[in-house]
Amino acid sequence: MEPIETIEYRHHTIKVYQDDDPHGSPRDWSILGTMTCLHSRYRLGDEHEYTVEEIQEIVERPDVIALPLYLFDHSGITMRTTPFSCPWDSGQVGFIWVTKEKVREEFKVKRVTQKIEDKAIKLLQDEVYMYDLHICGEVYGYVTEDEDGEHIDSCWGFYGDPHKYMVKEAMENIDYATKEQVGLIY
Image 1 (spheres, rainbow, N blue to C red):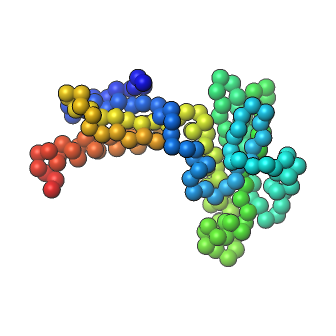
Image 2: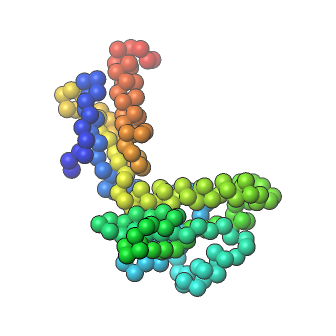
Image 3: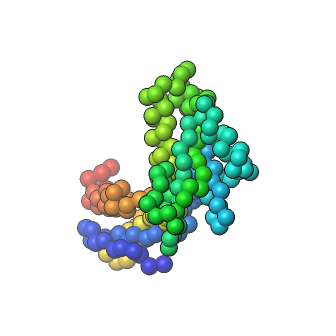
């Protein structure tokens, strides 16, 4: 596998790779919402056996907070909670939803106020964002090597822009290892 980027840093090389096999889907993590999607070609969201009618009944209940899920399918797929502008290659594929009972349990509150509901909606949107990164293949890993090409460190499963956190982490690990080598860290 070839790196998508190579960065030279303090006599080390950081190789950035696309993580083609991240450990599971973000839907496997501790999550608030249930993502129910129906699509003829893709298995999206959480596994379920709901019909369109059953999903519609659930999301219309007053004790449920729900957001629609839209898919854009053109040379790859991407998902979000707001419609895309292209009517030919996009459309609604389902919902992400949570019961107010689960919100009360998760937030440890007796009542779901508007403020709590807004927080729950933000979490549902974040879950969709992470899932979108996953289905778009925007998951990365790195390998660091010393100046002799020896493997020093690696880490995988970074979602989103690799320069936002991952490359910084790789550089911090190089800095730490360098300080440790010269005896600055005990």
